[in-house]
Image: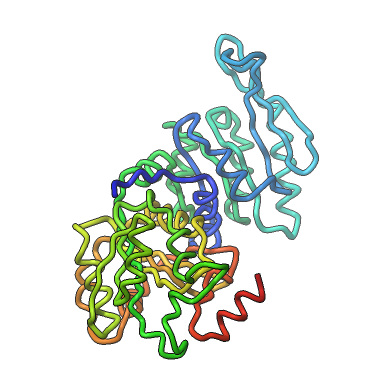
Amino acid sequence: METVFRPELRAAANVLRSRFLHNEKKHLFITGSRGIGKSTLLNAAFGTPKHGLISRAIRPMDGQPPSHVELTRTDGGETSVVGRHRGKMTVEPDGFMLGINTIREFLESGEDVFFLDEIGFLEEAVPEYQDTLLKLLDQKRVVAVLRKQDAPFLNRLFAREDAYVIDLDEWYARCAAQKVGCVIMASGFSRRFSSNKLLADFNGRPLIYSLLSALPKDAFSDAVLVTRYPEAAALAENSGIRSVLHDLPMLSDTIRLGVSSFEALDGYMLCVADQPLLTPETFYSLLTALALQPKSIIRPVHEKKPGNPVLFPAWCRAELLSIQGDNGGRVVIRAHPESVTPQEIADPREFFDVDTIENLAELNTSR
């Protein structure tokens, strides 16, 4: 299975929101080359903000150079011209008074987060606007799109220690290049269920079918189902996922067999087979988060409550292979709490796992 994963907009937006929620930095800055979709991503992640400023180049016709640049308040549409094309784009300093007054008004409010899309080269010529922006950054939280350009004021912003900077060129390139394997752990004895729960009926199909269907196989370089049940192995093979059959007793055996079946990769996802409500979007979000922070253990959370699946970076391979007894990936997580990056998911039902017949009945009733 050859990976063809590219960052999906919804997944990238999920990761962007999560980094803003869970990062220790005060501000979030987005940059990248022209046309890569900085503003599109910002809007997908946060919607139209109530408090913010949008800078937009106005083009008289497609393919023509912009005639001017407008600065617009997001809370009411008031607009001013901050640049005009006169052979080249030149600044209109008076137009920035709209931005200055808007930010000053916000500084006096009790609101916390201000959005800016974008900060570019025109601001370099307006010291009063620069000073106002710096006061904003010192006193409030800011989510901003920054033009990717070597300019003194922009460089000063990029260098701020309280800002988390995301370069979309680098992030998306890593998304396209990274190779991740997924271990689907399906070796449990279902002791509390009294029969093989993976084959129990859920929406007219075996329970495990939901997970196999949700897994975006083309997003992984490889995926393997590790199981003691030939029926589960056959379902995986029919879904285009290879399987490893075994009769070893421990959870650590399942992890070792799965991880060792891969070549050295950039990441290893451990996924339990009894979470039928997992969605492809969650898998994509975890993969996209790893590309942003390739040294981190990526763990999904909902309002600080963690769940599965968990994505481990390359450096965890040896530790995953050395887990002993009836222990799982949690051993590695506990050993490296500083390396865990939470990835927020919207629906806590995705964490629901089926342990008993009553669980499954509850799940069928609630859908």
